[in-house]
Amino acid sequence: MAGAGGYAVCVNYLSGVDAAEILVAEIIGAGGRAVAVQADIGTESGVVALFQRVDSELGPITALVNNAATLETQMRLEAMDSARMERIFAVNVLGTMLCAREAVRRMSTRRGGQGGGIVNVSSGAAKYGSPGEYVDYAASKGAVESFTVGLAKEVAEEGIRVNAVRPGFIYTDLHAKGGEPQRVDRVKALVPMKRGGEPDEVSNAILWLLSDQASYVTGTILDVAGGR
Image (cartoon, rainbow, N blue to C red; front, side, top):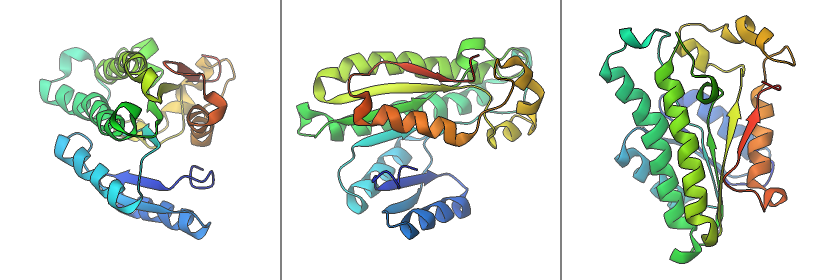
């Protein structure tokens, strides 16, 4: 969708090379520009290398979508070890902050950039806490929301807008990592609209926040959750 909107797109992946290359081929086939870059967002070296590839292959950055995230098998806090928590926070929080840092360094008018937009992807888990399933994931997304608000104020005078989307129950592969691929179907009755959401419905919200139509919107967390 971003490619169709005129963006040159960098598709970051950790291990899903086939899916990333298919997406890149679709964008290029439609007349757009795109590259797929393998990088571990949970490490500073991976983030720095990713942005260096974007610099050399796509040019100046005007938009960042922080969508990389992970979770692990559903369980109560008392069963979790610290290694699991560190893995969750390395990707979901540190990775988001490092990617935003690299984007700000390039976008900020204070540093000679042309401005731009950042959209962080949170989760309804930040609001509801995911008790009995993954409170560590929920806490990491709560941190992403606090970071969104603070960074938005920090760079508001430098041509950069920072917002977040807070998806609800969306049909994605992430639920399988939690051990319940069909989780959305189990919980969709909790949603006022009585259905799960589709990835495109989240993408549309992200693209709107990045667009000029949202030029006076920053520090906002937009629920895409069917009314929940």
